[in-house]
Image (tube, rainbow, N blue to C red; front, side, top):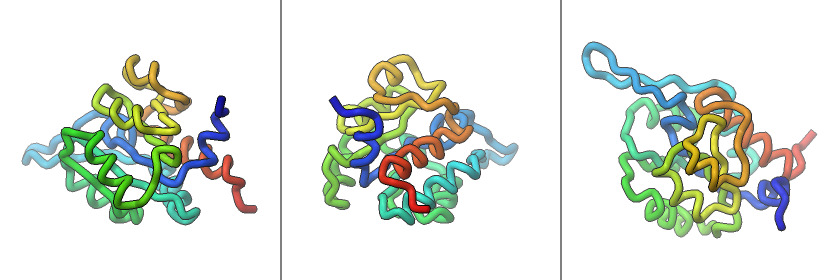
Length: 166
């Protein structure tokens, strides 16, 4: 049986949900109807560290948000799929594009629509405040809640398992 470190060491692609993972799951709208999101700076630093280590990072989200597009662009995340109802199908397409097998796939999710990602992942991670169905399928549950550094926690786990450079 693979340990958590064994699973993390094999990762070449980390797929993230947005609402409830990169954010705290709350939706904010201005009086003009503009959607606003709050992202944790440490999550961004972890994503950049993974990219620098040669690990792909992608987003598959059920909602579409210009704030997400902008933040992912700032971080250098090139594979952003928004407004996706079939997350499993989008994941299979992404695996083909990047030539990554499920054995090298990690996913972070928080709610039931993320379960198709978990079914394919070698390392399925639920955030601390994940829905019970997600927690039941996860190989690991973060200490941090979604939007509060959970993504950074997983990025550090993957980098440490691969042997963090000095």
